[in-house]
Length: 172
Image 1: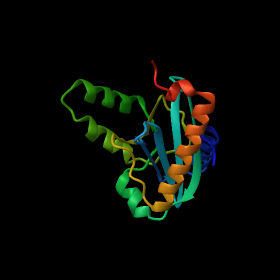
Image 2 (image 1 turned 45 degrees about the vertical axis):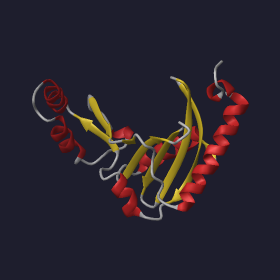
Image 3 (image 1 turned 120 degrees about the vertical axis):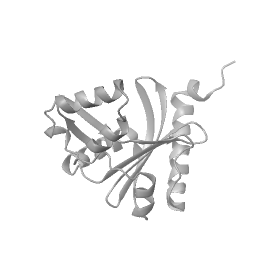
Image 4 (image 1 turned 30 degrees about the vertical axis):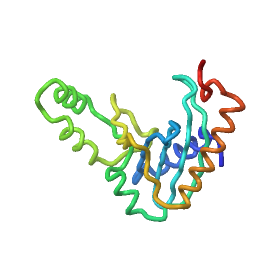
């Protein structure tokens, strides 16, 4: 178990070395903590965070192995990535927003292009994502991941009680 910021740095470094095949899911658990699942190949990172203020969050994460690649693909069918956008592509997106054109059709076309490393982007715009958001929380894939989730939640709540009690204490 490591601080969430360290895990995110590891993910970014790995993404930049191989930007294909990533999936990102975000949700909130029943206690309101943010859950983030990032997967690539057979690796999965589970991150649990709490937003302290709009510019600062704290949390913990852990790297695990994916037990069922099919389950992850079912949760997030489109791969995540950074996709450069030309001026003409940005114009098409803007036109779709202002007209009757289907924005989803325009974006799905761009999502079919291969993602690139952040260092390779020289275009005026970037399409980032998709990040799959779940309003009901993220369904974990296995009992092992459910156990990791409990451990992350316990560690996060200890940190919040110690350093940020105002975040979890009821205001009177």
